[in-house]
Length: 277
Image (cartoon, rainbow, N blue to C red; front, side, top):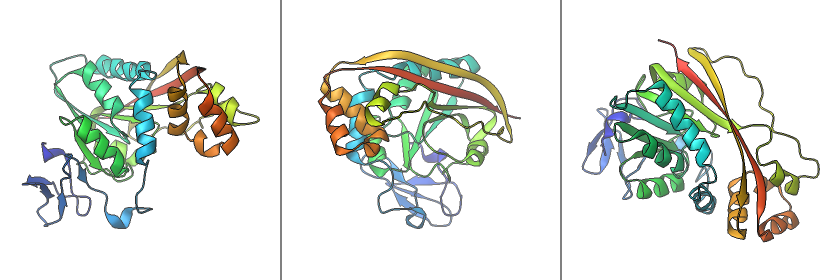
């Protein structure tokens, strides 16, 4: 693992890898886990003992995503990146902030090739353990997207799929001319599942946010298609990886998990922005 991208979360000095510890010039040290990731989330900045998604949720997500149900979203992200950086020989540094178990990074790697350095951060230690074990050529760190352990202007592309994040941190770590892609649920996303959970489901609404200071608004890419979940395991995995699982009564949870198939509308929007030079 090349440690050159990470910075100390305590003093912001660069980190160097010495044996199996990341250390800065101020003698702050962070051990590298056996799976290869590093924990850069200080204990005093955690909001719970073990924040983020747990292992069961992550394994459900991996089961669902690896069947390709959201592959068109990954493809849309890759096409947007390659359209902005058309030179396939140009080295790029790409960060997925809130990357979970690494599915979108793995898909982007297939599309973008080995001239891109892939980094992933997530607040969940279980997510980073799964991701680092599955994708050993990528770099992963347990970290908050509200305090990214990366140097200023160190990232060419920042991808954010659903995860919460700090806009100020996104602007800070992007290079001038860097690309920011934010994927979020659009109006009809999983509406058929929502009808099974809520008595009076409403379409997703995304608040119109003011422009991000330091960023130029680009295109809005719609990704909408129909998908058929072919078996009970896929339906159960989808339910467990969504917030709807916690909203559903025990009766509705059981009903959903008994379904043998489910026809769904997948509806994403990808906002594409460029950091001003």
